[in-house]
Length: 396
Image 1 (tube, helix red, strand yellow):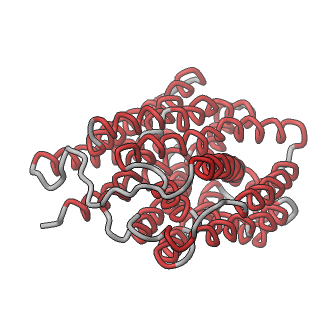
Image 2: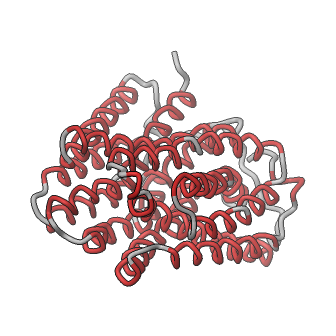
């Protein structure tokens, strides 16, 4: 019989893949809707703005409810809610219905991170490794979601690209209900960790909080800009290769799918090495990647996009462990909610920014130069985190 910790990690990993699939596959699907409805790309991409906003804003209430009620219960709501929202998008015949479906999709996406990350942190003995395994599925979700959407569009239609993943998500939700009913997973919140009291002064804790919150928002913004624009950038800059929607999906799948391995490596490193060093190096390495994305075309473009996402995913475990270190266990869901309000709250800003840059320039050069500058500034701020390295990796 699988224990609570292992089965919980299984459901959080599947949930991570599905959540990122639902949050990203519209950027491929929109290319087909653009052709069928004869509506401009910038107008269609803006339909996701409120949904992207809710991915962030919904995180705090989702985390708060999970702390006070049940993390497993909140995951059930997420799986079933995502499924029905995606099906609604697939059944839409106009922009209004599609907008409503995408908005609901964003709301249910917001549940995942504050709930699942606190679930993993409190049920895993090797926190970094568990977060790394979980993180693999996030990258897989973005990559496979784009590939799966491209495949379904080319073989069937864009409606199917929404409906089939929706059905899968509902099925997973009912499987989690069965696991709880048969007591393989507890509906109650359980922790195997001992509570830690921070040895940092209030002044240092405030400085750490301000620096990390800035870095989280900044890195969330650059990640969302790349995720939003990558399919269109590839579609534009690889036109000479007559790339299909399936080809765009395959390229995005490569960029995000394989970088999940980096998340695992980053998680294992976070259990063994100073978290601050991992964090700073991972941030500063993204700056030259974004600079090259601004100018490259063809296969080199896909490679530097891959590297940017690889460095971004490699620091996620260390970032989550830093937050867990400075927060009481009973508030983990809430603090991760705050984190993802900032990380995903950058989403609508990114969507709006990308749509405006494309509207005025018909390209994305300015977007990626901006990302390079933001990454560099974030690395400088993170360098000044007043963290005692030797104590960080113990008992997190």
